[in-house]
Structures are given as structure tokens and as C-alpha cells.
Image 1 (cartoon, helix red, strand yellow):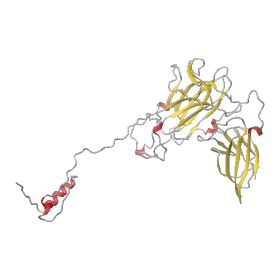
Image 2 (image 1 turned 120 degrees about the horizontal axis):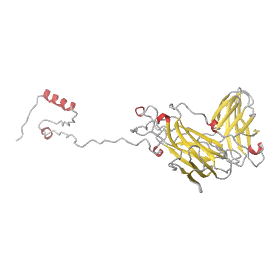
Image 3 (image 1 turned 30 degrees about the horizontal axis):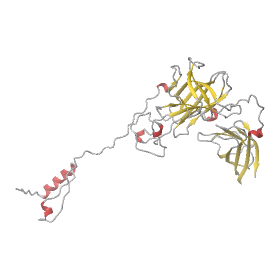
Image 4 (image 1 turned 45 degrees about the horizontal axis):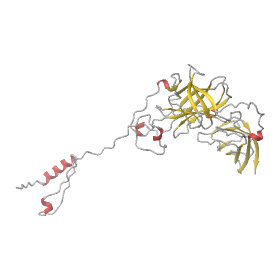
Length: 389
């Protein structure tokens, strides 16, 4: 038997308000009195299914760099625990005293090899011997768990194997998606140990201040030691060296406190032992061309050609002007610094080597009347300066 209950309109409205305040959804059918719809109003039943919850990623701080994206590509904010700060700023280190080369490997190169040996040591009794180093093949390791987006410093002690010729070695750290690095190249002999120092800063995945102030993702970087042909006396073939006391430290606690520029990281070349000095004409040429002039200023280009038989990498270009006119802008020479009348450009992290016969194109805008540079040098080699109409 159906029982009909009639509510006073005010009572009905009060009950509906109570349901709405409780978060229930009620579907009310409106129909004419006496119709079928009016006899049985339709009420939508609330869903009893569990809500769908998208779980946040819990990737750890040592996530491989393949998870990186460029700063212009943002994903959901990460939820993970930041790596613990390095005690007193000291990170991982390798002394090889346990007889193991854990974490170190050779890059792809036929004949390249590494082994822990007692032949020589900077401290203790062991070091890592590397044979078959070239300009494209070297040894590498990784530094992970970086606790902050700031500058880091890595030092390594290197020495040529006894009886071998002096060589040039480059220590570089390559954080993924970042050009913030300072490689160092130094001349290495078998007479003693040479310190190589490199700096790097990992890139940011999220803009600073986003993601609840996190704004960045934990990173790791690859350390690489390779041979260099930056100087005329660099050996043409593979070289053998000892590596010891590799130490990573946090250089600063501020991402804006940068280390020395790569100008301080270039080698001082030795003299080829068994060949006469190369003439300037065989080393480098610089062709100067005026693009345009106007009252009070001008624009000019400079094409610098490598006339040696070796690839220059990294390279450093110095241009000295004959007057004190102001330099408004300069391009094509990498990271530049100005001292007096001389502007120095250093190959940037994304730069390309200059092969034999290859060239480097630079340009600038200066005040005053256009005039050719009074001196140009490439990796310390003086260039013959000429002009082009």
C-alpha cells in the first residue's frame, strides 16, 4: 500500500537546503499535477564508487638525467625528498686505494683501457692508469645526488706514464641540459702531478619559486678526462696517464656566485720539441671587413682561419683594437671579456672545434671610424691581419 505524505512548501524548501548543504546531488522532476512524472519524481542516486586519485611521482633524488626536460618544458610538480647536503660541502671522491675503479669507464675507443695500479700515486699507493686517451675517447665517471642548483668544483690529479711524452689533458663536467661548465686543459708530464680543476652547475627543470618553492630537480653530471690537441706540441697519437685523488665539492651556496671564467682554464702551450717554430702565416690568418659605417660608429666582421695541421679545441681568440673607441657589442667569439683595448673570446660549452683550414667568424659594433685590429691571436698564435673590401 502506498502512503502519500504531503509537505508544506516551506518545509520542502528547508529540507532541500539541508540536502544541498550536505553535498548531495538531487534531481528534481517538474511536471503538471496528476501526470505520471508527478507521481514518481526521479532522484539521482549518489555514486558509491571510490574517487579516482592520480598518485604523484615519487622518483628518488638519483634519477638518471634522461628524465630531464629543458627549462621551457614543465611537467607536474615533483614530490620527492631532496638529496641530503654534502657534509661540509664535500661530495664523492676517488683515491683508488681499495684497488677498484668503481664508477669509472672508458668511452668508446678501440684499444682504450683502464686499471688500478701501484706504478704511481699522488697519495697512498695506488692510482688509476688509463691507456689510449685521444681527443674523442677518454675516461668518465658520474657525480650524483647534487643537493642544490649551485656551482660545483671537481679536482683531479694527473700525470703522464713514465717514459711517455708530455700530453695535454682536459677535465670537463657535463651536466645535462646546461651550458654552465668550466673545463680545464693542462700540459701533463711524467715528472710530477698536475692538478686539473673543472666547475659546473646543473640545470633547472622548473622555474625558481614554483612547485611550492622547490623549483628544481635533483641532477647528476658526467666527468670526462680526454686528450687535447689545443697546442702545437700535443702528441698526435693516444696517450697514457695516471689519475688520482678525484674530489667533488660544492663551490658555493648561491647559484649566482660563479667560479673563475674559462679564460683561466686554458693551457699554456709548450714548444714542439723536434720541429722549428711555425711561422705566423702558417698558424692563423684574420680577414677584416667593414660592413657599414655611420657618423659616430661602424660595424665590422672578422674571419679567423686555422692554418695549422691540428684541430683547435678549446679555442681562445684575442682581438686588440688600435684605438680607445667604445665597443658596443661583439658576437661569434663565445664567452667574451674586455680589458683595455683587447677583447678575449673563449669557446663556449656548446662551441665547435676549429679543424685545420677551418675558420671562426666574429663581428662587432664600435664607435668612431672603422679600422683593422692591431693584433689578433688564436690560442696564443699570432695571426696575419688583412682587409677585404
